[in-house]
Amino acid sequence: MVNAQTAGMNYKGVGRRFLALVIDGIILFLVYYFFAKIFNITYVGGCNSSFKIGSVTTSIKGKVFHGLCGLSAFLYFVISFGYFIVLEWKFGGTLGKFATNIRVVKVDGENIDLKSSFIRNIMRIIDFLPVFYLLGAISVWVTKKKQRIGDILAKTVVVSK
Image (cartoon, rainbow, N blue to C red; front, top):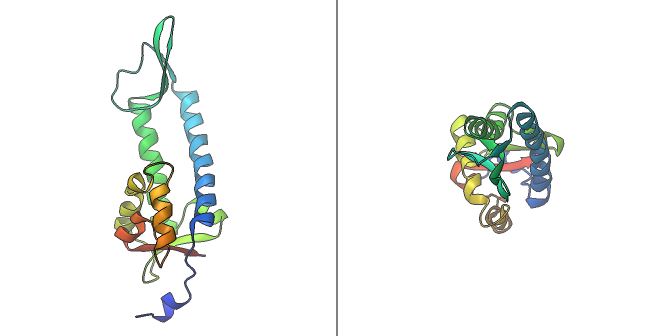
């Protein structure tokens, strides 16, 4: 049943959402760059932690890991997911969504809650598969309310602000 609150919702597709994701990606890259300046991001001999974000090269001196290792990688991971979860929960969108004039709401038009924000954002891992949000994009293209898998499970939609 359509109520007055959901009748005027304008669901947003891949284009606007992708632009918002690019803006958010730039912001998170700046956070990564800040972490790289604070923490030493080159580890001769490799990174001994199982929690790492970066790449390994081989040189005459052996393996060299370039990136965040251990605690710094974990903190960056928490900040990255926290950025999406907290901003969408508290404000209805990230900085990228604000810049592109879109927001996240529940399917009934109500503000998103913490549980819904957590579900939709943890599902980014699945939506990302097999490469750069292809599964999520296909889901947005084929669903009536333009929802990615995380939106379907969290019962949320992305709409015009």
